[in-house]
Length: 446
Image 1 (spheres, rainbow, N blue to C red):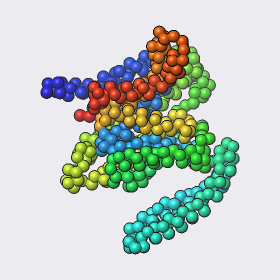
Image 2: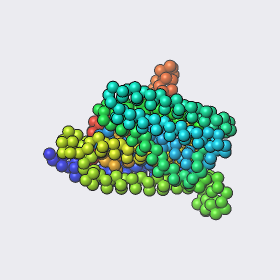
Image 3: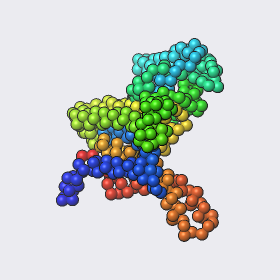
Image 4: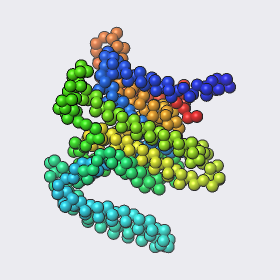
């Protein structure tokens, strides 16, 4: 009992201690040049920025799992949908694309959605004897009409300046506007998935979200009219200055000389600091809103449903409706992170959406940081991302040191060649250690 009370008394200090550890790690990465750290502030800030985006992803997953116990195994798909928003909102329109088939594509999408809505109405309204035939008739006619509109339009769009574009392009609007749009894209998809899958058992929900995530990524890879598929979209606008413009600014050149730094190095640091400022503001705002909601009657109801669905339903709570709410909100946060990531990279490449990186690793971040604790999920995400990047460097060094006593031969060479996989072993080891010694995470839920 005394040990338990001491742990509870010490728990408020876990988050500040973990934050202090992270600050030390990033300072060492930026200042010390040795076998363990690069000694480059550009590298340190690059890791930090992606860590902040990962923290937002982890926050979305934590809302679903930590608040409601929903297992979303399709994180990568909702992230990819969010990443589509900067392409459709901020990239300049492709000349001739809309006249070639843009309006016809929109008409096809309207027909497709109308077919699904009409099918649902037919299923509910018709008597049981004619329900199946009516449903099949609606679906067949709708599918034929959809393909009649869609296929010629897509072929015309992809044939328009196919070498350089072959897609619709965007609206040319400010890139920051694409961040909430990315959240809306993911939320809309989550609503559709949730209406179908949230009435199922938790294992079926995991399977459904896994499949939906892979379907979304496959669509982005193959539908070139939308975002060029695997040909990628480059030159996505930024909300921060470009390095080349800073390097041509006389005042910036003078500042770099006065600080004893090269213009190229300072411009890279300045741009990354601008990104870090934006990402930190968004992350802190999301944590503030999440904490306020968690401490509200709605948050207490969500945790009650998570802990005992049967009891909550007996008290008159709409369990499925509340699950749908939190599923949509969590996916919206994930979509927001996807839009932010594409904005930072300036590149939309569907092949980069790897479930190992954007689903498994995000779950590791939430579990290690502390499921149900917003600060724990965010700090755990930054820590895991730092280790994920650095173990790629530390792993080969460790294997090289351990194999020094071995004679030259196939075994030693095999170990050295396999050292690149150390990051996977390291993540598994970290997860096992945390689950063994701190099962509720480094910063557990109160």
